Structure formats: structure tokens, C-alpha cells
Image 1 (tube, rainbow, N blue to C red):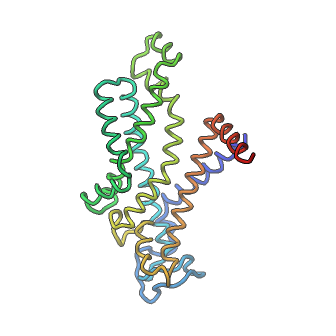
Image 2 (cartoon, helix red, strand yellow):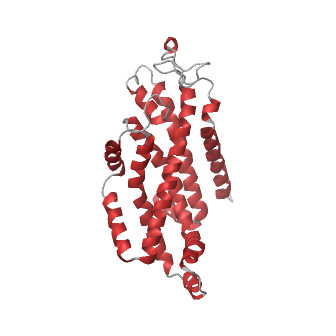
Image 3 (cartoon, rainbow, N blue to C red):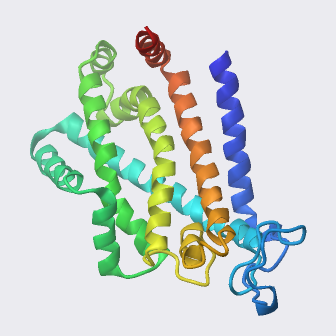
Length: 280
């Protein structure tokens, strides 16, 4: 019951965050792109809650406007790699053969390199822009889900309930969609939710390096980069978008942890046992 309440609490926070991100540009108290050099580098105050940047733009308004790109780009990226990787993993685990060998070797090739480094190389070849950044991270992000879905498929493929479904005359699509996917979907969902924060930070990292959203567009990673050179005299320019990333990643990570405990009570029990042993 406690896990259910925690899950509802963090789900409400995540939904509120998504709602703010969806209508961020309508909630801005100032025009996030209007420049006024007379107001440049003002510290946080009653009128400008998070201060202004070097061009006199209201940082709070830019954080709200940038939330749409930062949050929903990460969600779209996670959705893409989850669906693609799960589809590949289920097909490889169920049918095996040459397709399994080829796709898993490709997955091993991508997993052999640090994902962000490989994404930097891909984004560098394609050029700047959020679309290219999302594509670069999608290229290196699907193998993790493919490996997970394949291992879960192999574990469930010969389970008694799957054998019974085969004997009842169920077709392969029905076996995969009605029987297999509901039994492995929980772990994949938890992994996807926990991956939102990682993808968001990697997208912000690419934007910070100039390979994501291009100025003057508002995006949290590019905003941190814009304030980097003035960190000592105007720290709020980087701290405000950095705090937005921190809060967003924290909410989705806590939601993923709570969802994992809710869907798999045994894992929570094992975690408690490990903590008690560590105390002893």
C-alpha cells in the first residue's frame, strides 16, 4: 500500500512536469527571446525570479520555454529506442537463427563504445540540431533494450503458460502480443522510465557542446553553455537550467525506482535484506 501511494505521488509530479512542459511557452511571464541590454545580467529578484542573461532575457521564461524541447525530446527518444530495441530483442529471442546472430553482434558493437562518445561522433558527422542529436542517441540507445528484451524472451519462451498457449493453437503474433509482452513489459517499462533522466542529460550534453539545439532557441543544455563563461560573476545563468535538469531527472528516477518496487516486490525484499546485512 505504501508503494502504491509513493507511485501515485511521483506519477502526479511527473504528470505535472509534463503539463508544465507542454504549455511552457504560454506560462512565460516575459518573452523568452526579447532582448534588452539595459537589463543584462541582473541577479534574481522580485521581477525576474531567476535573473536575466547577458542579453537581458528573462531566465525563468527561457527555462519554461526550454522545458518543452528538453523534456519531450527526451521522452520521444526513450519511446523510440524502447520500441525499436524491444521489437528487435523479441524477434531475435523468439526466432533465433541468423537474424539473432547479426543483430546481437551489431548490438555488441554499439555497446563496446561509450554511448555519449559514439553519439558525439554521429552528431558531429550529421551536424548540429536537436533532430540530429536525437537520431544520434537513438542509434546508440536501442541495443540496451534489445539485449534486455531478448534475455526476457528467452527466459519466458519455454515457460509452462507459453507451452499451454502453443498447444491451444495460438498464432505467433498472438503468443507475442497477448502472452509474452504483458509478462516482460513491466521490466522494460521500468528500464525506460529510468532511462528518461539519462537521455535528458545526454541531450543536454550534446546541446552544451553545440551539437543540439542552436542559439537563440531556449533549451536547458544550451542555456548552461551560454552562461558558462560568466559562471563566476553571473552564476544564475547556468544554475537555473541546471536546477531544472536536476529536478526533472530526480522526479523520473524516483518514479522509476518506485515503479520497480511496485511491480516487483521480491526485488524490494532483497534490497531490504542487503541493507540489513550491510548494517550488521
